[in-house]
Length: 154
Image 1 (cartoon, rainbow, N blue to C red):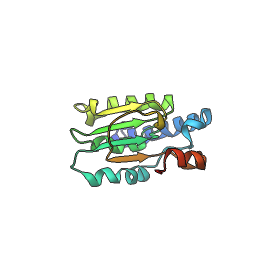
Image 2 (image 1 turned 135 degrees about the vertical axis):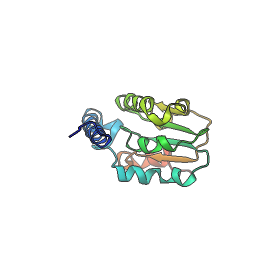
Image 3 (image 1 turned 90 degrees about the vertical axis):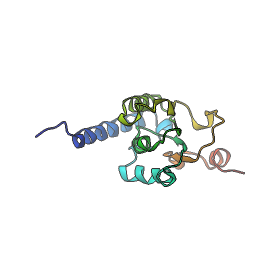
Image 4 (image 1 turned 120 degrees about the vertical axis):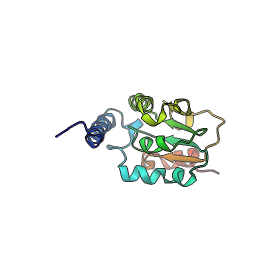
């Protein structure tokens, strides 16, 4: 039995991501906010707004990407001319995401279209307008006052 099939590699990567996520959650809950990465089903649901826009060129912002559960669904969907900005506050996860982007087979000619930013989303400075914003952040980690100030348009 071949243990190096695409399915076994995916299962192995999910196990590694799960342990990495748990360890980082214990180490620094402020920048993680959860104990497990998003499931494949949730990742697909979160990516639906981008899929609905296809084949139009889209600028996408992913906030709180963690180990990349949703990022893996988004990467193949980025059309030529589009952009994916990934914001991750946890430095360990941001390094993991950079490796994921660098090694992704669908991005060989689109590397410059994807950027990983290691900062809090409120620190992101850009004049780019986003067509789709996807957030894996657990809003229960924020005080109601901070949510009103940072996320709700007044």
